[in-house]
Length: 218
Image 1: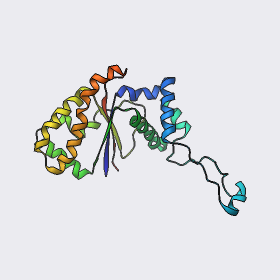
Image 2: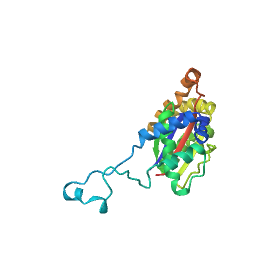
Image 3: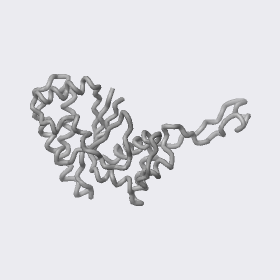
Image 4: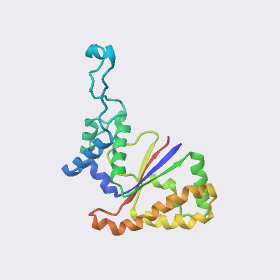
């Protein structure tokens, strides 16, 4: 089952991670440390606990797994350095961790390909402008030096287009089938929040958010 993960955050705020200022780097590291605390080995019970490191890692040793971020992953991201293909899934986990912590809001849509196509057809029948379809969310590249990998797509929609999409989706809702409306209605409600961010952003010293999408095919 594929999943669209949507975040309301300025695309430049995402790009800034890859040439992070000391302040941003510190905030990024704090978020990552909270989300990925180090995992350590427990103390072995009974006689195993007396055999020592000859037969096991000492209690409290940090465990490093292939899907676990390490310091070099964080450092490479913040410096905008090349990320090796085998570390790209981990790097995107770090970016999504940051997005989830700093975005104005987020929304997820679980869709397999058949349901996706049916929804897009239903939206077209309802007269939705093709510019606002779900398939267009990954048309505009994020413009970051981190490559995607098979099964992962990313993109963004500028704030002004997200505002127009909110009205377009709301107008299309009455003409959708009940199953598709159940998917579209929460998304339309989430898009409607972009109007409120226009007024709130200046007081928080942030740019108005764009719509950032991360699509995972499974």
